[in-house]
Every structure is written in structure tokens, then in C-alpha cells.
Image (cartoon, rainbow, N blue to C red; front, side):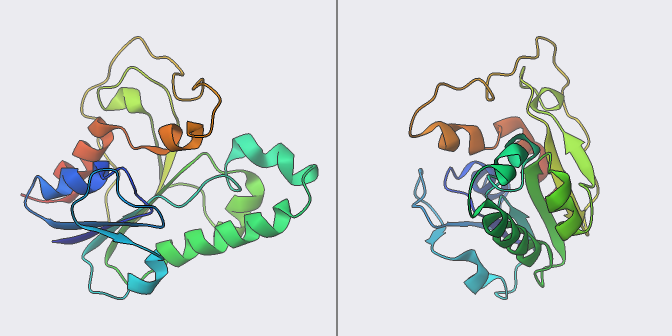
Length: 189
């Protein structure tokens, strides 16, 4: 399959699909952390390039429930939220037969614009990682992910990441167990 992993700089999901023999590409405004098949630029320009599957990781800053309070205190935040929702929808409505767009739990304003709650909520501890990080998957043409290895000892490590200029980057990387489950369950044999 031709697989597009939108808004991914870490190459985690891309490499999970590539390891199963797929023609997997990542695309992000940032360069890839691991080289390989990566297109640096605006993903909206390549959505019509005959992909079989897309997994999108649009920025969550203005859509996630944890940031809703800033809508009422930070000037310009409402417009940024609307633009983020439009980008999310552009990915979800792309002319690709199978799509997963992931984001943290979305606040009600974003959900209203998107028009739907997540199809499925997953946690890293469902896929072999002893951490919590509720993540919504909006699915089109794909079945929900089946947990692969539930673990105990669940902690909020990602949420408690140290402050700093790269905190957002550390928090946005997909867990390898989730990427592996996506490639195994949605990548066919």
C-alpha cells in the first residue's frame, strides 16, 4: 500500500508501515528525525497523490480539551482554533479510502466544528506501554484498533514532561506499540 503519515517528524508510524513492506511516507513542516521517505512541506498539497491509507497527526494545541481555558483568556485563540479544526477536517475528508486522524481528547467547541467525537479512544497502556495518554482516533474506512498488550503500572509520564522548548515535540511522538498495532492491523499481510 501507499501510506501517508501526515504531520509526523519522528518517523515512528512511517517506519512501522515501512517495516511491513509498504511504500510509507511521512510529511511535515519539520524535517524528519530519522531521514528516509519524508516530504518536508504542506501536506495539503499531496493529499490527491493516490494514497491507500493516511494516518494524520494534526497539531492539537487549539483543539485539545486541556487547552480550552485559553480560548477565554488569550486573544486570537478562537481564530486559531477554527483554523486548526479546518485543517483537521481537510485531512479527515481527503480523497483517500482509509483514514485515521488522531488527536488528544477534543474540547466541545472543536468537536462541534469537526461534527463528531472520536470513533475510538486509545491509551498507550493498551499497546505495551505503562503510561496514560488518552488519544482519540477519528476513523474512516478502518476498523477500531484492537489492544495488543495491556500493561499495569500506568503513569502520566507524557503529561508530566519537563517544561522546555522541546516539550511539545516529546509529547507529540506516537508510542511504538501503537504504531506497530496500526501497521499490523491496518497494513494487511
